[in-house]
Amino acid sequence: MKEPNEFLVFSGTKTQYLAEKICHSLGCPLGKLQITRFSDGEFSVSYEESIRGRDVFLVQSTFPPSDNFMELLLMIDAAKRASAHTINAVIPYFGWARQDRKDKPRVSIGAKLVADMLSVAGVDRVITMDLHADQIQGFFDVPVDHLYASGVLLPYLQSLRLDNMVIASPDVGGSKRANTYAKYLGVPLVLCNKTRARANVVATMQIIGDVKDKNVVIVDDIVDTAGTITKAADLMKSCGATSVRACASHCVMSGPATENVENSALEEIVFTDSIPYEKTSTKVKQISVADMFAETIRRVVTNLSISSQYLV
Image (cartoon, rainbow, N blue to C red):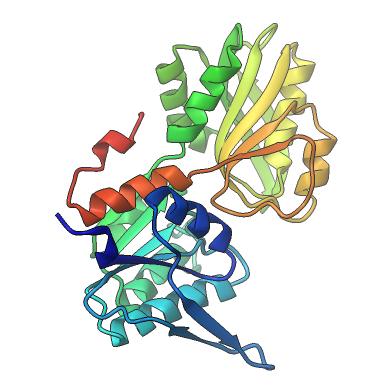
């Protein structure tokens, strides 16, 4: 078994808040890393301590802007050139994951491109959470440890002790995730069928199932503009739901998302802290996944199974 001082944890700029929590859970200091920025926007990465022969874990979510992804690539490259033993990218939120296939002619598959760039940079392992599409794991030729936010979200939902609870999916594409939650909690499942006018704009939506006099919990992986989830909440409330709340893995919350949530029928929306929420809303709550990632890192270092990390 390796001693704890044989691995080091480093963080990019925008995910340092989570890396610090992970290190606190691991009982180790956050590694010393310097990112130098130039006036034209370019930046460089340097490790301020020796990492030769060490297993390094680089914590960085790749949410916009693309600087966060570029930081991670430079961190991987610098670690490779500094003779790290293994380079493990800890990516709580894997950006570009919604571009996982050719859904129309002449488009890129962004998720595959990102996977290729990480591999070329020199990553040995990827630890991530709730990929938008599970098949993205197959885009890599290195091990991918795919964690699930259900490990922290399900206990929270259980703690609410809601009567007449139903789990809902805001679209058909998320039905598998919602069904998993419903089975674990032993409650009914409701689906929403939507059509889009264009990206981020919902044209029509219908509810499949009964929500009258029910406490509805909408389950999703990513909330971007919150247009879909708030439209679903308003529709369910108008159909007689007692209460509507939501939980999602990744708090993208871009553009008018906060305003949409505040003006909706949602009582609350619960996220993990894979992405920082820098605005203010009385309805937004975040639950940390730091302990889950810390335990996964501990198990990777000591060559133990991580399957016990999964509730469902």
